[in-house]
Length: 498
Picture 1 (cartoon, one colour):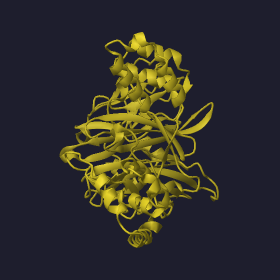
Picture 2 (cartoon, rainbow, N blue to C red):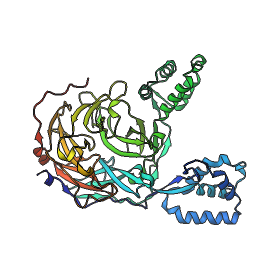
Picture 3 (cartoon, rainbow, N blue to C red):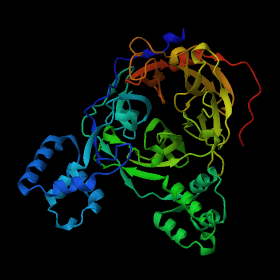
Picture 4 (cartoon, one colour):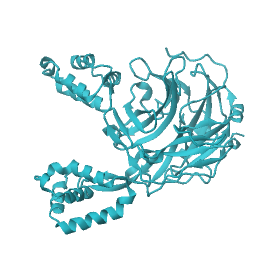
């Protein structure tokens, strides 16, 4: 019965190799033993005569100018990053500087390998719609060369009825610009606590910083540390920990005239240097109004870490680490509001069980309460969430994923108590959505996976990745889904997180 609940739509989003961004390229830095060839390349470019320099520059702009926004500015920026290797940089003509910037640039196709793992939230712009329509923002995991993931977006209009219209994604993708961020003292304290870095230096720094501070204030506080503390044997290592923890938070913004689908959140700190994966966006609402929040997995090539995004408009984003035992694995998803005054999240801290974790007063996500462990044959390897809980009158609807034989991923559902989400009220017997013949082949075969849907006009709209090759869409009547869920046997509720 459950296999007939979800209706697949014919609309899909496929990877587009023409969606390219310009990245810094330094010859030699991609080798196993890093030896930059930058100085030699700059010398060769600088020795070109004016005629050849001009011809090469014109040819480059003719070939690439329409594929990118402000290519001139990008070349200037890349030149600035390597000009320290030029003895008499001021003597170089402007055309030579631009050409050097071009030689230190390359195109990267952000989604040439795969496009997958979408989440869906209400779009900040609801203008120009007809009755029964809702504009949504869709986050996407984009995978390019080297399995490097970034976060991209698309827009679509739902309704009326089952109608789905995905907006055109033309126009050059743009990587956000890193901007100054006002740091939070509580996040710095949580990060230092995570590595057990608690001594007189860290205590002095935290005591001197205000609740919100900028880089100048941070530098001043470190500069005013007493020499007696800095001279201790632990001083250099402690300062390194403090600086590294502080630098883990950053902000990025996009030009006001860029459309949502052009914006690319690209790795910006060492923790995410090998990818930003599986963003789970949610529109969080409290007394101060709505804000977009997301969790994602940062990967540095060896370790994973859970990070959070916050944005009021999906144009300016702040990225911060998440701390505590509840977020030490993939699959964290935030609730769309507080529950009984508590900030809650779903998680999979042990790698195979869906749990519920809460944020404590020290900004650490606590040890989770288990909600659902692998039970049925289609989910015996592991279970996890498919995005943030969705509020209904009957309870919190949680879309889940389960992994079965041959690492086959399918989507299921749970229902949690609205006031005490530690208590599972019901679960769907069997899978809601499984890979069919059209879904099973791709970059990662036999997978359907989502990072979150929403309810509109009584329908659950579920975007999903199909074998990490493309994104599909399905709808489910919410009333029918709730009716199909089997009530859980009565059991004492798990203790509430205080």
